[in-house]
Length: 211
Image (cartoon, rainbow, N blue to C red; front, side):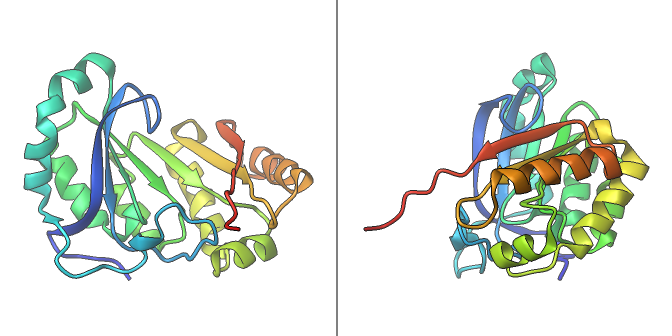
C-alpha cells in the first residue's frame, strides 16, 4: 500500500557515501516498510514500522541534507532513497525533489515490487534507478522473497520504455541455497536480451550462518 502522508518514517540516513549509491557523493536515506520478506534481508527490522520512530517531512529532510550541498554540486551527487522500499513513499520523494530543486541527483534503490503508480509519480525526475532484481525466475524469486516477480517484470519493462535502460542498474546476486551461478547467468541473459539492460551488477551474498 502506498503512503500518501507528507511524513515518512526513517530507519536512518548515511552521509558522504562515494559512488556506492549513485554518481558522486550521496546521502542515503532509508524508509521503513517493505512488501518483501527476503530470507537474507540486511534490514529485517524495516519490515514493520515500530512505535516512536523518527519521522521526517520532505522539508525537514531537505534541510538536513543541505549541509552537503557543496559536495553534491562538486561531484554530481545527491540523495539516494532506499529502505525498506522507498517507492512505498513516492509522494514524499516527489515533494522532496520539488523542494530540493534540480541541482541534486535523486536516485532510488528499489525492488520494483510496487504498484506502477509509484513509478509514474517519480519517473520524470529520478536520475538513476538501482533495481534489486533477486532472480528473474519466478519460482526462485518467490521462494526467496515470499512474493511473485510478475509486477517487477512489468515495472521494469515500463521503466525501460519510459526513461531508458541507461538510467537503470540491475543487481543480480548469487544467493546461496536459492539460486546457482547458472541461474544468475540466465537472469543476466534475459535482462540483456528481453529488456535491453546493460548496466548489471553481479555479485554473491556472503552469508554468515549461525552455529
